[in-house]
Amino acid sequence: MTIGQTKGITPDAIISAAVELTRRKGLDDWTLRDLAGALGVYPAVIYHHVGNRDTVDHAVIDLIVAKYQLPEEGLPWQAWWRLFLTNLRAVFVHYPGVARRIALIGPGAKTGSPTVDRAMRTLLRAGLEQDEAAMVCRVLIIQACLFISLEDDRRKASAAKAQISDGWGSPPPDPNLAGLVTLHESVHERLHDPEKNRDYFGEMFEYAVDRMLDGVAMRLDEVTGH
Image (cartoon, rainbow, N blue to C red; front, side, top):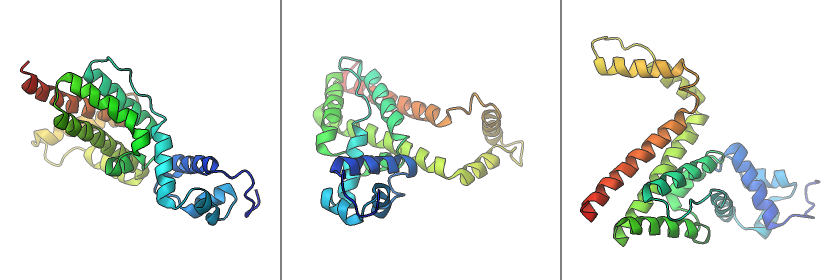
């Protein structure tokens, strides 16, 4: 397409191109000029059809949020949340920067409403009062998104990751530091076992989710007297 031609340019086409840029570069690593270049138009065309960068970002996030699958109602609350957060990560890891933005500002009300509604009803049925259910809902989603955003950062910072791995994977200078020796053995074993290193981030995410849900379960025992 020659720059300046706008035939076939629609809001949907603009947002689709922005989603693809987010997949390839990350939400914070492309500009409206990059988006315009991908479409073969001037940036003013994007402003005309969609709006400013914030408007584009919100539309991108809404489209990506719509990609993850909500678990069916009726599952036990822990199983529902574990599956929901796992599904969320399965989508967000392919669009760096989106999880961080969700943690900061949340999804749009229209797109996020089905998720929040089902999440809240799951917690209410489990026995939490509405204010605490709302708090738990926010904490679980925010913490999961922050964990994914850390994963985004670590995937980009390959040099830093190698430095950390080399440092903590090396034997400690003092063999009497039993804690460090144990950590070294764990890191060394993982670094040299491709099967254990295959999905390190996914394993950490699942562990973090399970421990958060354990904490909520303990709180529910207090609330319900079980």
